[in-house]
Picture: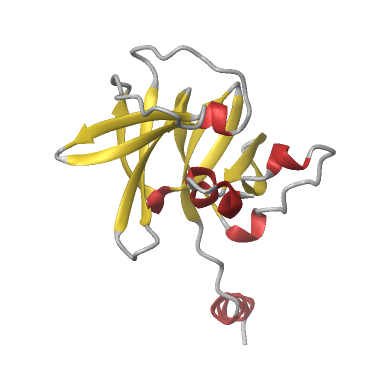
Length: 167
């Protein structure tokens, strides 16, 4: 067998893992990522209807094509400093299955979108255990991509309304 045939057989025997796409965004200058398949829509900031006695990180509600959607501030959810909303503020809408098996949409306020990146799951490392347990509680992993350190966010845990499910 020739070297070329050996290489082709080796490639067929060990197929390369397919890379997944992630939407990256910035919060307080740091980069975070979520699987692109969880993103439903990206919108500009718009005024919300506040809900009395809500958590500090719960901005309020908006109406999107007849559906009432809760909006949360990811900065506040991650215990980062608050930042004023401007016309440049971005809301990323995420879709997930709610407790009764119904699709649910939640909007997340981020500072700015970065881009869409691709990398393999094997490149993801476990989040580091830092001295403050809460600092990485929504981190699903960490990856270095193009000389950038990106924290993968467990978006389901981060947008959970019940603190006991998110901790």
